[in-house]
Length: 213
Image 1 (spheres, rainbow, N blue to C red):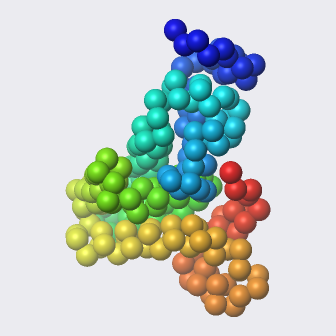
Image 2 (cartoon, rainbow, N blue to C red):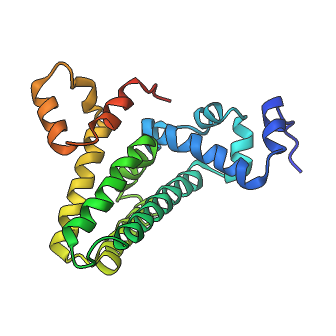
Image 3 (cartoon, one colour):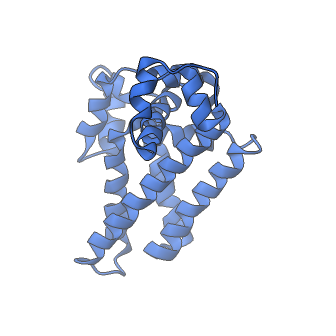
């Protein structure tokens, strides 16, 4: 048993179900890692965001690397679940051979994930860590899992998969650099964002007012 006494907030969280406790910390970690990246984030910042103590986070996950890997897996699981749900719903009304319709359906679902900016940004941070022997391997596997889904379940060919992934990475990039912050003042930023998100630009613009962790 740990000799570190629980804070008041820790005691409240401890009374939650174990899966709810993990979800609380993972949600906070997703926001902090998304805003600050793996190297810029600390378990202390994550603990403050979750409303618990830093020793509590360490007891739950062990270290920052393990926590980041869980954040990465959570992001991939949420994304793939959303994709599969959208695919099934679309196939009830659309021709399974209409690849363009399937891509649009999954693409809209990906844009909807903007509501959880940390989710997309934590994925981007992971994808940039290819040199890390542990996180890089997990990120590559995650990307290949997405590719396998597009190829085997959606039925896209390699070129179509490449186009879809390129669009997603461009969206991640403009979210990460907060291009929406310049939407009102820079005509080129406005033109680019309206080209990328012609029907759901409001989702991206809403992120401008969100504070960073």
